[in-house]
Image (tube, rainbow, N blue to C red):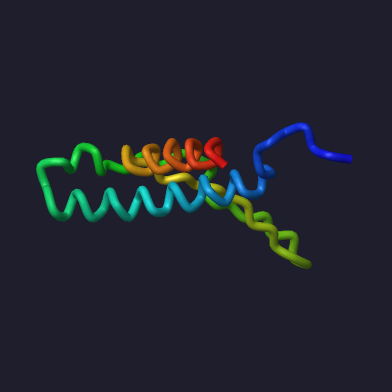
Length: 87
């Protein structure tokens, strides 16, 4: 049965978002190092759940997720979305 959706799968979308965020963060670090006056755009905000552990003496479970976002990371997410929509 053929797919009615012309876009690639959600796995490709997730991969593009992760790569867009990483590359956007790298570009943001480089821009802030080259032009210190733009440090406001490079300020990082952390969103998520800090890591915590559940020790049951038999095994230990650890949970946590943090997303460190700045302007360039969001720009990378947006560009990755447009790249996904293009293909």
